[in-house]
Amino acid sequence: LLMTTDGGRSWSPQTSGTDATLSALYFVDADHGWAGGRDGTLLMTTDGGRSWSPQTSGTNARLLALHFVDADRGWACGEDGTLLMTTDGGRSWSPQTSGTDATLSALYFVDADHGWAGGRDGTLLMTTDGGRSWSPQTSGTNARLLALHFVDADRGWACGEDGTLLMTT
Image (cartoon, rainbow, N blue to C red):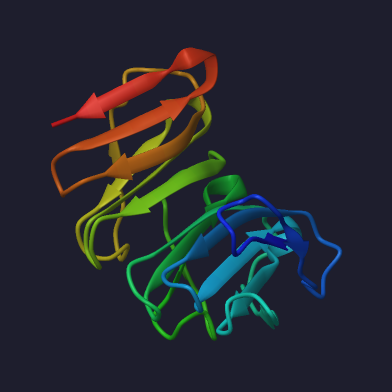
């Protein structure tokens, strides 16, 4: 983990307390952030990254994306269709049923109810109930989706391998 306080002109290392490869990172503000990675590793900071606390994810799957809508409610996704949710800032995580075994590498929520996850073979999932249920969507591609971004519950973008760029309205 690295941190900058000058817009990226310089970076200083932070002590994560793990040797696991970290592949997901999300901050909701300057103090509250989470990192995830190999073997279900989840870490949380409440002091801007000066210290990181391990969290129990309940999975051994590699976690590839994190998204939070506030300092309490967030989701993680990764290998084998893994989807996790927390409502207490990451102190405890609950598995969600994704309905897929595809690796999920992208995740985005516009609010506590509306979210999307994407990944291998163009897999695209949507929830309208905070992840209690996930429905497959047709992406129109077989490319791996690597990032999602929505501006509201209707308008969003996905991008991925081979120059894939998708939009929904």
